[in-house]
Length: 118
Length: 174
Image 1 (cartoon, rainbow over the protein chains, first blue to last red):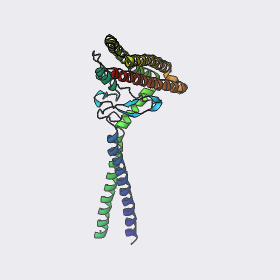
Image 2: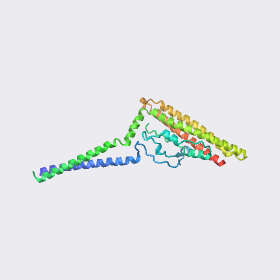
Image 3: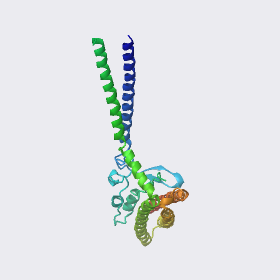
């Protein structure tokens, strides 16, 4: 009888350990399944596509045109904007017509500067 | 040995194996997480911190020099376009008011661009002056440089806005 009681307590302890183990595992799995949706392999926010510029802010009395940077110009090693690709993307033509100048102005990207490391 | 005792020992063995397996699996999973993108990002952040002033100075130089050059080219192109429009309108005896207004906006854009360049240089110079070994002591300087950089960015946006206004005015004249 005493022997059975000891075994019962042991089983109970082991069961608790199993439950704790499963809970830890599930918790970790949840964290990993959330991360890739927000961050790309460089740990930066995934920027997927170019969207048409939209005037969404009038702060400082200046038209703040938010244009998403295409993912192609993100350097895969550093996770930062590839300067060369960015400059190529922003290249101007020799055309001096107003339509072309207007299109080039609308296509102008002033990058957001990230100072989160400071 | 009694059958009951054997059964309990067998059950106990399974349970212990199960618990050890699940705990090990959880640990393995945790180890995998240490090499996730977030951690890689943290490593890079640490590398940047080691020479943070120079890092930001280089980055801002790349960005601001490019904006300055690009806006200068756009201003030159717009100037040519407006001069041509003005000549045509005057030759045909038409009202050139909007083109003249556009030229005034263009002059404002030039001034804004010059100011953006100055403020941008200020930010870069402050960042360059930060000693990597004394970052904590010079954190206020870093924040001052950050503010200047953000101000320069706003000035570049203002230049863009003024250039767009100039184009809009010029298009009315056409």
